[in-house]
Image (spheres, rainbow, N blue to C red):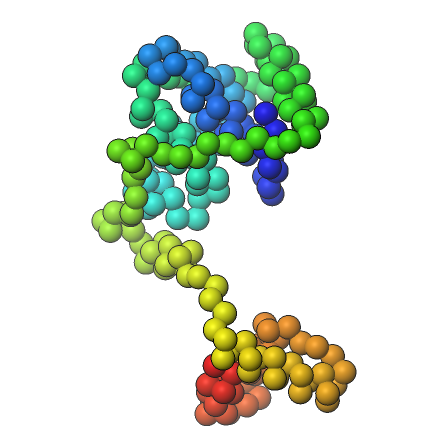
Length: 197
């Protein structure tokens, strides 16, 4: 397999390989997954229940862990995870490394199947397990970046005026930050904020 690399390609590869193995093995066959990844074993065996209670807020690879958990619950036979040392000469280690190298040479990326059977799709967070910080982070994750037409127009007007006066074009973030400058009185900062909106 070759999956899209993100800021953490090693763990992404391991989690995608585990998801593929769980999906490809018939659900009534015993499955043993040998891995050197603490991310996979700790995530599934130790952290999964807590992550589900808080709806995976701020968890890296949340979509992969969610899909792996659902596929594991859908299996009818035992699935075991075995953590092996990186230096171990376990049967299959060399072959696994060769397959991983071969995957990096593929021209087309494989898209992992992250669909979840509805009866195993655990959504929402348990209020009894939430802390204010985690709840706030979850709310922030759901904010959409809507660009209002009137605000965009006012930002463009401000940008044009700065260009005329100083021959530089500020970013939106710079305009917003300058409008909050403490050198201005609070009432003037409020006026700038309302004007830009």
